[in-house]
Length: 396
Image (cartoon, rainbow, N blue to C red; front, top):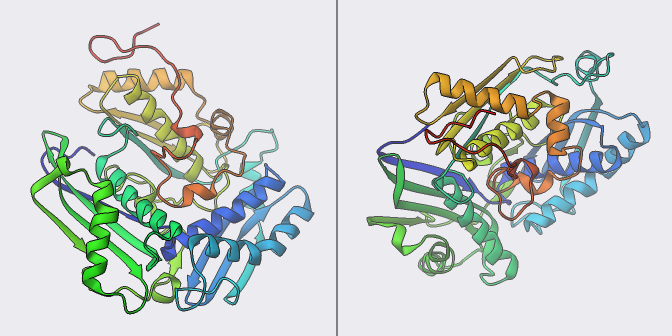
């Protein structure tokens, strides 16, 4: 999607948001399986409600001891994630040491597995579905500007909380950034919303002044602020009860935060807790990788990629490239060039992006794309053919 004129907003949430806690627990479980057995099949879901955490899913390992070991470690994995997010007790949102943890691990369905680990040795798609990838030249990260700044705000909140610079900050927080677009370009920020959990009995006016000075001013450049720029900081005035004590958390409920902030379509499948045989995750990463190559190579300032798969089938059911302003013929040519260069089967994606590694826990907060703090393989750039005078890839 390309906004031509008007306001466009994106939001982000902190690592202490209950939905992000669920994503991070699911990916911590995934990473533990992959650390012990890179070929493990994992589909892990997490639910948090007040002082209760439920970790459930379907798993398949060649070594039965791996399944048993991870299941036995699940309680300590949950506690570690909660502590890492900054929770200390029930008063702050959840007690890592005393909360109830229910573990419901099941084996992967044989009907699903026969389509993934096929008898002919080919890896089939772990499910049907459609995935989108997007890139644009609005920021150095080749990401839409609203989601980039929304992520920066909550990351800054977490940095100040962790360092103790603002000791009254608590783990749960949300941000929202509204950009004004003119002729398809982000030109000014009209509004910033930031809500942060805080300690009991902390003065609201003092909080708002500190958040504006220490968080927002550090992230939002003065030159980008519109003449009518507004800040809305803790609009309700009080945010003491946070985390799972204030709101139930569930894996996969922040898929727009995870991706492009609503600036591009989403296929609907969540990422966290899924091993790379699940194309919901791996093909979405590949779609981002492909879109980023198109923009970085100068073929188009914006690019949307769609992939679709059928369960048990290796080759994609469809592949679409929609480069900004391109003709149908030019889009088809770019798609053909990418298909000739990259293998879009699940096995090819896993090999190209080196996905059978425990690298997923850090992606479960602050977005899976455009991360300049992580060396993520789907964010890498591959040398390719130069663009011609029309912006099309040069034919070999």
